[in-house]
Image (cartoon, rainbow, N blue to C red; front, top):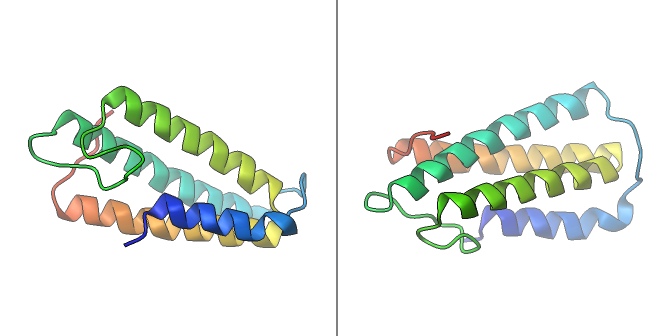
Length: 123
């Protein structure tokens, strides 16, 4: 199965030529951004929980490895958060909506699965 970050990267590459830097965010862009950010934060906390409980859980993201340190998780999520925002801000409004909605749906699936298997949020 594809890693969610890999899918997002493919989407970014596919729509980068259609970007229009500096186009303002409308209400829908902001709502989708807020949803994506909230789910990203939940995933961040859940991944920290995985890092703090290596005897019970393992990470599926190959970029982090099965048992990442909390420091590695922090650096990864901060980098993804900054890159995701900069990319979303660079896209046209239509492509931004598609990117943010896709990001939110992927994060929703990841966080729901994590919750189902007993992973909590740790900050």
